[in-house]
Image (cartoon, rainbow, N blue to C red; front, side, top):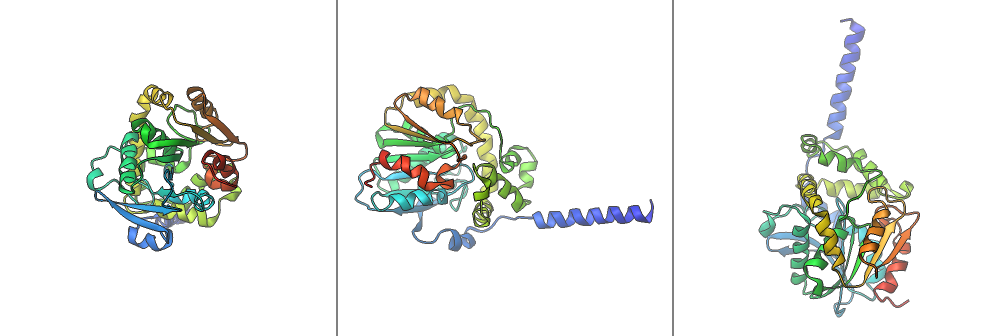
Amino acid sequence: MSRWLLRVVGALLMASALALALSRAPDLPVQGLVARWAPPPSDFIDLHGQLVHVRDEGPRSDPSPIVLIHGTSASLHTWQGWSAALRAQRRVITFDLPAFGLTGPFSGRYAQSTYRGDDFARFVLDLLDALGVSRAVLGGNSFGGEVAWRVASLAPQRVERLILVDAAGYPFEPQSVPIGFQLARVPLLNRLTEWLLPRGVVESSVRAVYGDPSKVTSALVDRYFELTLREGNRRALVRRFQAMQVDSESFSDNRERVRALKMPVLVLWGGRDRLIPPATARLFQADLPAAKVVIFDKLGHVPQEEDAAATMAAVGPFVGLVP
């Protein structure tokens, strides 16, 4: 082997070693993340041994609080725009689901959870009990939307109204899947991502779910990246995707459960959603003929985060906000 080739191989090996070193991303202890991502009004509730990150805002006299559930790899922060618009008149409760945000993997009583959809729905019902909420307006985005309709199916008497934002639950053909989700689904490779996770992978994933990727700021990527690194979250995400494959076998049952819902429903969708395309909104409309459907042509998979004001214009009248 010539000296020139040896130098090239050596340079490539050094570059590879440097790339691996820069990509190394060990778990971050939750205590170190709290100061930055859980300022007031954040609080933590011990729910049967699971420490849950919660924000409970607005008047406690509200007889039917608005409870909002985030989607996969997101956190309660995705609802900050809605909370700001609602809390003057309505009690608004947001929280990090297990496996995500500062709540982290299922633990305590829930440690044996299979990470299936109904496991999360039962968890939400337990959280409502702990917060003294007997009846609520329930909203959710993406997987959070699926959890919301599952709660409404399991306990319809406890859900006054339902808001589904780019909600999961039906079969769909994605036009684009965030690379972070792709990696979490690949055996062996998903274990590697527990130790190596370039920030660029998270940035690419967030940009993929926005209708206008130019709205994705460095601060926004920091939030998603650091909360992904919360200890245990990446391993829990793998378990969630494994459970999702099992849940997908019950799509026909899901459809019957949705059709049985009787409460008023508002369906919101980003017209540029490439993960769960807008055609899915029409499936919900077909199964819930009385539901109101609003499509936001320029928004993506997380319209409540991408443009809180535009989406709140549809939500306000639905939940009785006084202008």
